[in-house]
Length: 159
Image 1: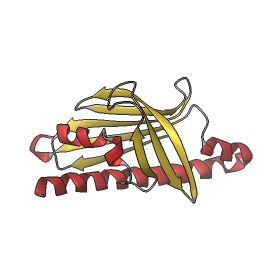
Image 2 (image 1 turned 90 degrees about the horizontal axis):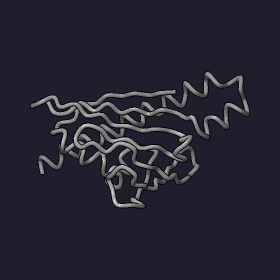
Image 3 (image 1 turned 180 degrees about the vertical axis):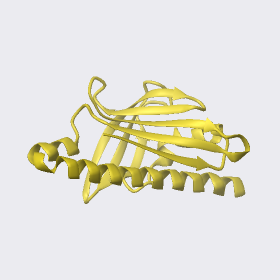
Image 4 (image 1 turned 30 degrees about the vertical axis):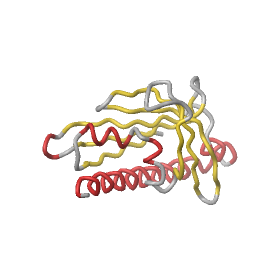
């Protein structure tokens, strides 16, 4: 499963990239990731960070590894094992001049272990519904996160 959302931000690509790549400042802007801390100095390729997530009353922590760190155009990380990540997350930024920045936010599921994969293994007949539900939930969460990040950038510019 791959989920992609796009959102326009009212700021330069440099300012947007600086916020999106600051995983500690981004924590809490969306409904699922509630806290994050750098394990290694970052942002930089190879830097790790730990993210604490909360969903449906379940809380868990994941270790993430930055795989792309190209200011101001791209920032990407994987969750879990390098050989078989549970997911890949990426921001691609496009300069729109005075119009700000277009952010393309991507989530790619797998190929490693996930809660979704566990649920499908338990109830294979529900695979389509589970994937559709999680994809919709992720899309909404990603859009909410980008909306909140844009508001943070707007407030900083006004402030």
